Image (spheres, one colour):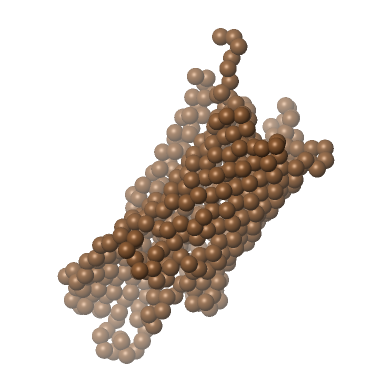
Length: 439
């Protein structure tokens, strides 16, 4: 094996071990966000560090330098003799504000582990694993009703939870008529979550109450993709893309225990298949358009729509949060995502100046989350910056990214989340499937 290959594999092994350590549940949060209390938690950006540095676009992206996992049809945009892989991690720092209350957190998590390889002429495949959603929260409040305080004393309510869902996937694509590419992807979701609620009344331990719910979850679905790449002038191309992911039912096991004082009052175990209202993961539809000039410049825009109104999260304990009136505080709704990004390489063929080979990127996004709080929608907006630094030969590169954003608002007693995130990824490219004429 070449020395370069050994160095790259050692680097990947180190990055992989760090990523797995971030998600092994060793006392840390893979997510920390008050909004992750609802449903299956906060939804993750699905792309690699390459996608994240361009605002999360990728539905219409065809780039033989990187793996694009956002559209299964994009797997055919590659060198037919190359083996490719992508590994990345993500670190996020948050500041939360609600009224005069302020708190902060930081989390570190795996972003993706993907490999891609050719199958037959004009066909290719990719397999990998990446996070789908995360829950991580802990907050408390005191009962402020004078009647309650005068009758039984100070009442404290404490909520906490932690868990993650991942998606393992395998996708294959084929290019037809030179310009048209089709792809299909099988996705398996899996993970677990644990949610706790504790109520204490002054120093009276006998009046304390708590409820713990642990769930092991899984689901399966299929995603389809299409891309059409049309040359429009010398070195200029226009690429159109679309994806559709089927909705799927969530299966698994739920165990709930309710305690009063030090005694277990109710203990219940059941499968999600027996729920009166089945829990569903929403379907998703996306469209994208990309304008490309050779290997030097590309600009892309994506729109993604996903309707979660039939998820039934608010109808099942463990997924919902009810207010004092007994009505759900959160309600599922349709989500919308608008994303745009650009990439610029000063001189892709330069052999003298290294900085001319660096791929510089920037992007923006604006999204509406898949839930509302007491009828109030939650919006996110942000900008991304990043670059891929070429290393060694071929298209091997180290990608670094920065994200600045805000979620929610201070209106209607909501929580505003301001965050800064950093991504680090390595994409490996090597010629494996070549038959040498001379030994």
